[in-house]
Image (cartoon, rainbow over all chains, first blue to last red; front, top):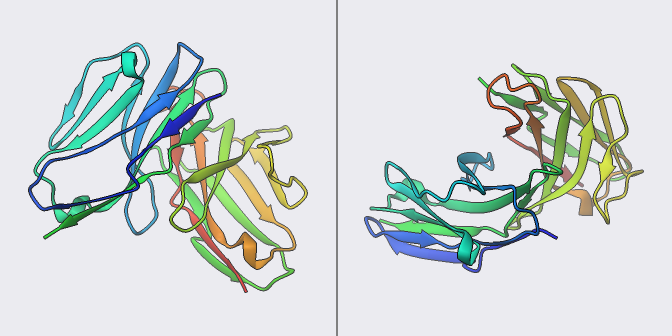
Length: 114
Length: 119
């Protein structure tokens, strides 16, 4: 069965610090997708990234970067030079190609303090 | 592009009444839509998979008679919470799969959510 674990329930950092959100996943499939979503207080999910299981290249998008390591079944997310607007709940998620269901981790609530 | 809407965005209803939530894909066709429920400060839990023209598939523990799902067209799925009770109060989010790759093959796009409060 598929499972996503986000061990960090809540993190607080001071603005401009770097912060890494951890994500560990479990799946029996060889073909799957991993996601990160941001959920601000408004509730609407904001898509950040989708990565397929065959692409282990790290990705950088502005202040955001992702580290995908199949060897440790991890897909960690780093925010560099954090800003107050980054405060939100961040969800890591997994989808197995065979059924398309997206299974979410429990989320990490990130507080960026001014 | 790739917009999914939900209506209403929030609703308050009395205990015992039914409420319908709509999920629409505005600019692509969605043969499959998914319904999630999110309680305060918790994660999104998949409730059911809705397939156009066929019966929905419910996740374990979700009452199919309480949460009626209808996917009558390629752009619309509805979730009806029947005989709602205060414990059904939650944030309901749908997602739609871009079946023919109008924007991105098999990508799922999420709606903005509907906040249901049952008094």
